[in-house]
Figure 1 (cartoon, one colour):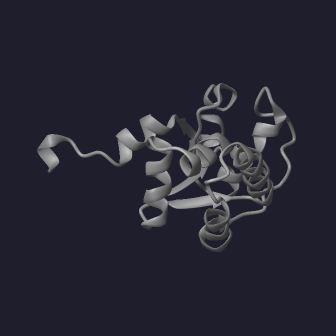
Figure 2: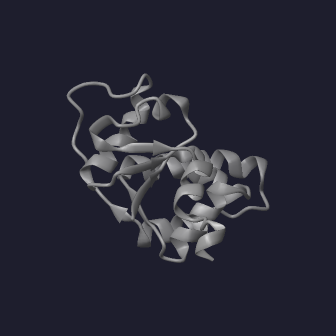
Length: 140
């Protein structure tokens, strides 16, 4: 299954535990395919570096190297109109649509309210892990 991770989810997954971290672990284990664009990768690097100054014990470099090597890179076109209230968030939808990916995982309200745009569902990290990673007691 292909997914696009909003920057807040990616960076939270690197620096903290919880559902974002579980999603990155699932990606490393090959359970999901991460899709990025050059613009998304640039934002991961920039925001990760900013957070890295606050948490110097966490080294983001190995994760970014894995993303560069193992994520599916797409080069989406421009949108004729703004998708999100914050046009900087449009890159996540453009990436997903370009890769024929149907899921963005985000905690950003400006992205969440656009769920359904272009056939792309936006889920919060906990919703995503609950829907795709956890089995009910009857399935165990």
